[in-house]
Length: 180
Image (cartoon, rainbow, N blue to C red; front, top):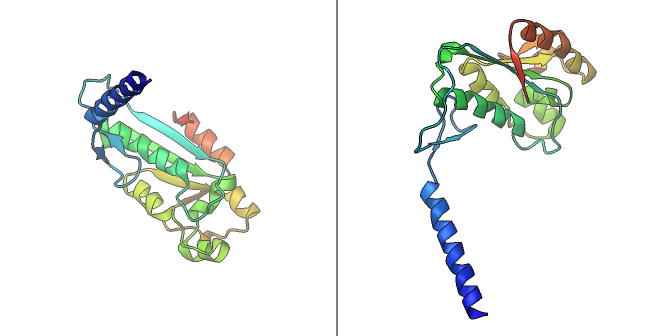
């Protein structure tokens, strides 16, 4: 029995030391503090930096806890950072984030968010960073109407489209590929 415990302990220590040896530092090539990438000490297949990448990111659902960042937005930041980390130049990368239905609340100003949920909007900083990185953030006007949102309730810089259907169909017609 003691030898089995010792063997298991040795295996655990070896596994633990192996994972710590691979542990790398988090990097944020474009959008700081969101969507981290891990440094990789080995060679990987890289995307073609000469191609034009056009991605459509849609966010239909919300989340219950309105005090925390809407997690899918962090994933979209990772998409931006992943392309930059892999060597795709900014001029060859375009992305649009379309907020609609249950996620429309993420576009509210702090004041309106506070009124509706009792705290500041934890998503605004990331939405601003998207815009600074050249990512278009668009909210569905139909979702706004259904949720009694006025244009002045929407944070600065976020574009308002007539509907998610028309926003997405236009972007796909222009060559944007839906992710997720």
